[in-house]
Image 1 (spheres, rainbow, N blue to C red):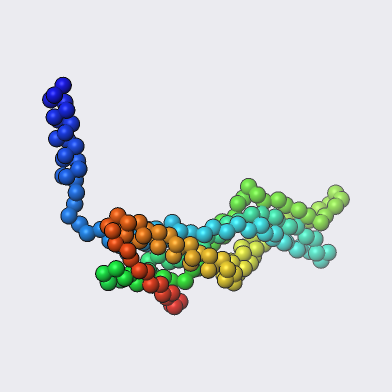
Image 2: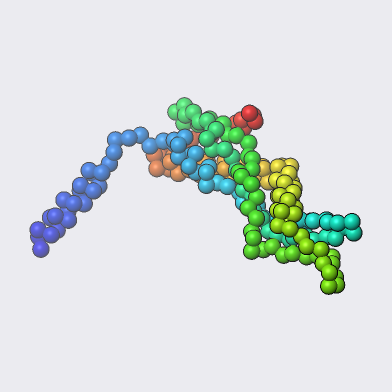
Length: 183
C-alpha cells in the first residue's frame, strides 16, 4: 500500500513539475487567425426567385431559404506586441463564399391554372436561383450593419483570447485596433 502512495506521489510530481515548458505565454498571431476563422457571422435569408416564360408571361416562383457567411480574412491580420501594448490590424469584414441554398426549403409556385401548363426547365430554374443568389450577395454586401457586427464579433473574440492569456500570466494588455484598408 505504501508503494502505491509513493508511486502516485512520484507520478504526480512528474506531471506537475516535469511537463512544464519553459516557453513564454503571450498572445500569438497564429492563434488569433484560428480564432477568427471560427468567428463567422451566418445570416439567413428567405428569398423568392422568379421565372417568366412565353408570350403570355407565364410565371413560376421558387421560395427558398439560404445562408451566407460574413467574417474577416484572418490571413490578413497583423499583430505586434510591445510589452503590454498589442497593436492589431484587422481587415474589414466581407462575404466568405457564396450563399448556401437550402434545397429542402424550396417551394415551387405558379400562376398557371387549367390542364395545359407551361413547363419550366431545370436550366431556367437554375438561372433564376443564380439571379436570386446574386441579389442576396448584393444585399449583404451593402448592409453595413451586418459588416460592422461581423467586425465587432471578431474583435470581441480576439479581445477575450488576449484577456485570458493575460489572466494566466498576470499581465494586463492594452489593445489598439486599426482597420486595414481594402486591397
